[in-house]
Structures are given as structure tokens and as C-alpha cells.
Image 1 (cartoon, helix red, strand yellow):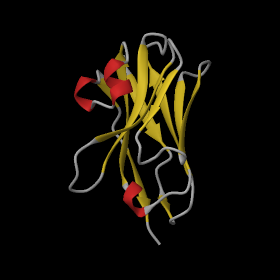
Image 2 (cartoon, rainbow, N blue to C red; image 1 turned 90 degrees about the horizontal axis):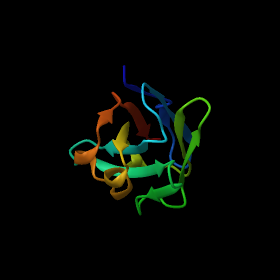
Image 3 (cartoon, helix red, strand yellow; image 1 turned 30 degrees about the horizontal axis):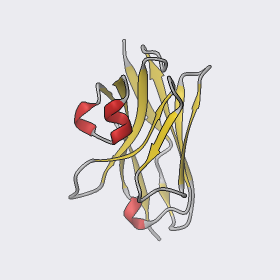
Length: 126
């Protein structure tokens, strides 16, 4: 019943923009925080951004602050990540994930997330 489906990954030039979307099925964003994580080749999975609807908490990794913006559409149960001023080091598979209560999500701890999407590839290259 629970599904998280990412979309929007693409090849983009440095300085460009992309918008990723996560459609959430089978759970309420009132109970689960939704976060974005990424895993670059040869690197550990890291937290990118998180939104907890219950209290409006939002967090960003230092590496993306000022460039990425997370948002939600409560009616459609979707969470998006607007990615601007993209850099080659942003290249990664991006995953959305759900966290009951949201503490792991807010802290960017992938191990505590309860549900995961399959990921969408973002490649930043000229």
C-alpha cells in the first residue's frame, strides 16, 4: 500500500535547475516526515532536506542551503525539491523517504527512515 515515487531526475549543466517530485501513497504526511537523500558514486548516502508537516519543520544539508528548496502539496500528497545552481558534486541518485515522527528525517539519518522510493538519477555535467 505504501509507495514513494520520485520523478524529475535528468542530465543538467552546471548552474542549471531541476525540480524533483515525490508522490506519496498510502500514508499521511501528518504522521510521516518526508525527506530527500542522495548517494553519489563511491560515497555514503546523505540527507539533503526534510519537511515535517506536523510542526512545519524544515532542514537542509549545509551543502545545499541557499540552492535547494523543499515544498509540499498537501492536497496531492507530494513533496518536491527545487534544485538551483546545480554543481557537479550534486550528481547522485536522489531518494525520497518517509519517517514516522520525523526525528530521523530532520537529522538527516537515513538509517531511521521507514519507507523509501526507488530513486531518480541527477547528473550535473557539461
